[in-house]
Image 1 (tube, rainbow over the protein chains, first blue to last red):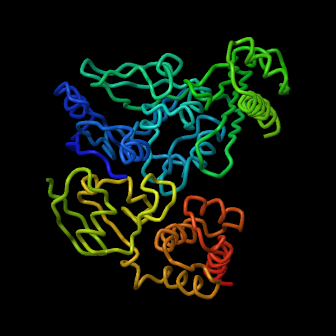
Image 2 (cartoon, rainbow over the protein chains, first blue to last red):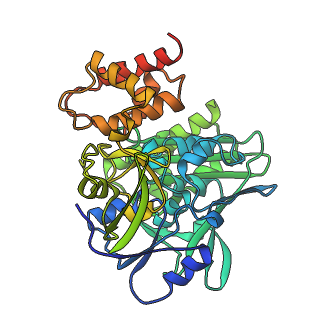
Image 3 (cartoon, rainbow over the protein chains, first blue to last red):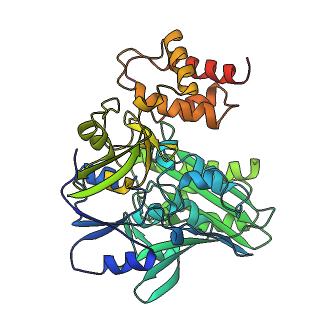
Length: 275
Length: 156
C-alpha cells in the first residue's frame, strides 16, 4: 500500500505547472490535494514518473463573482466551498454538494479542479457542475480556453486534457433566484462514492432545464428526454418513466443499477419541487 | 531524496524523504511520533487523521514533500490542549475506546467537530464521524463523549 517511486516538483504558479508538465515525455501528473490520486498511487493503480504540485497556488485559488457567473479556481477545496467561500450561484446547491463529499478531513485537501480533471464517474463535482451548465477553464502552453463540461467529459477517468494542460478553474453560470435543483445520491454510507447520482435543474426564467445521471460508469449522462418533460411543466417523473428514457437512450444496466438510476433521477425531481 | 522542513507539535523539524514518503510515515518513522496510525492507506478509515495547517487531514494520502512549510499537530501535540483534555476525559467517562487504534484519528476529527460545529446534534455528530471507522466500540461511547463535550462547552 505504498506508491511506486516518483519525482516531485512544486510549481511556482499555473504557468510554471504547465511548463513542467510539458518538459518531457515522462508520465507527469499534476497533484493538488491528492485525495483521489493518493489512494490510486498507494494502490499502485497509478504510477506516474513524476508529480507537479499545484496545491494551494494563489493563482489557482481565485474566487470571482463575474455578474452572471462565478469563477472558482481549480485549487479551491471542497471545505472552502462548504464553508461558503463562493458567492452563491446555485440557490444553495454548491454548498450542499460540497458538504457531502467524502469526509471533512478529505474536504480540507480535495479540490474542485482535481475532481473535474480526475473524472471519477462516481464523484460529485463532475455531475453537479455539469447539471449547472459549468465550463472548465483549461490552461495550456497556448493560454486559456473555456470548455463546456459536456465536451470536456469524455468517459470514466477521461477528460479533454492534454498532458501539458491543467484545469485552471470552473466557470459556473448563475441560476435565477426561483430556479429549483435536485441532487439525489444513492450510497449506503455517508461520504461514500455514489452508486447512482440523480441531478436536475429547473430554471424557468432562463429557460434552462437539465437532468444529468452520474455514477453510471461512464461520463455523466445528459438525460435530454427527462429535461424535456421538465420543460413541458412536469413536476414529477416516475421511476418507470425514467426507465423508459434510459432504455430509449440505449443505456443498458443490470436490474439493480437500472432501478437505482431510475430512482435517483425520479427523487431528484421530487426533491427539487419539495425544496 | 528531498529535504523537507515543517513545524510539528510546535517545533521546527527537517528531514530527508523520498517524494513517495507519506506524512504518516514521516512522523512515525523519522520523528518517532507513533501515535498517528495507519489502517487502510487510502483515505477512508480515518486512523491516520491529524491536524495539518489547523484542520484535520489524512496523513496516509498526503506526501511529506507536500507539507514543506506546513504546521502539523499529531495526537502527541495536544497534551496541553484544553479542548482535547475535555475530549480525553469524556472518552474515558463514556467508554469511547477499547483497543485505541482508531482513537488518535478519531480525536482529531472530534476536536474539529466540537470547535467548528458547536450546535451539532447527535445526527450531525454521527454524520461528521463517518470518516473515522472503529471496529471495537460500535460508536455509541464515542458519540456520547462528543455530545457531552459539546454540552460542556455550551455551558451545560
